[in-house]
Length: 182
Image (cartoon, rainbow, N blue to C red; front, side, top):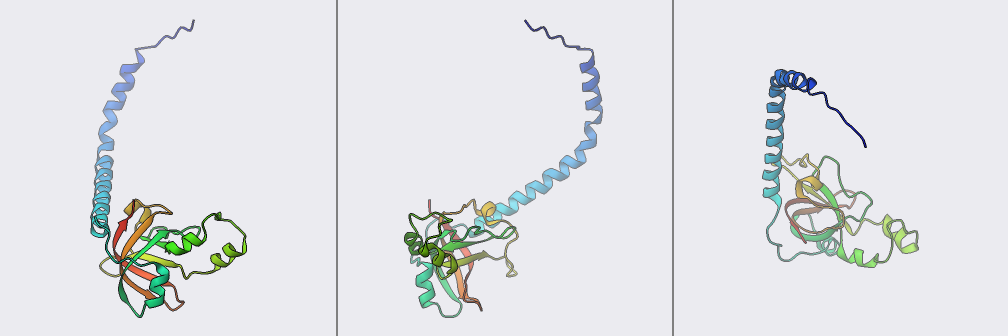
């Protein structure tokens, strides 16, 4: 049998010591809570601005859009987050999506597959689009898309925005709406 004994004479001193110093933490706790509250409110505001309650009609895949795009045009685009090993831009509200048709072609293959189809597909970017969420000044929002929208790799999304091809031929979408298929 184990016998434990507690020295209760020490407890009041420790409690008294802690209670005499608690006020020193108050300014830090207040500042910390105000900063966190503001940050969460900001995230909620941004999330509400971009997240769509209903899926917009007329969504096309990345490959179909590439065939018909001319200049900067309004689009509704469907794709799966991914297509590359790391589809996220750290500290920015942007990610890469892959055309659903390209996904079907790669079914049954692992991410590190070295077969001829996968080696060729890994070099191509035609089925990919970079989706960026911009602020009012045209800069990419400085918050991770995963945190802002609670999305993860391999989720299917529908994006509304303006699309264009950059100088290198990459499809870039300045998004103003996001619907997450669940």
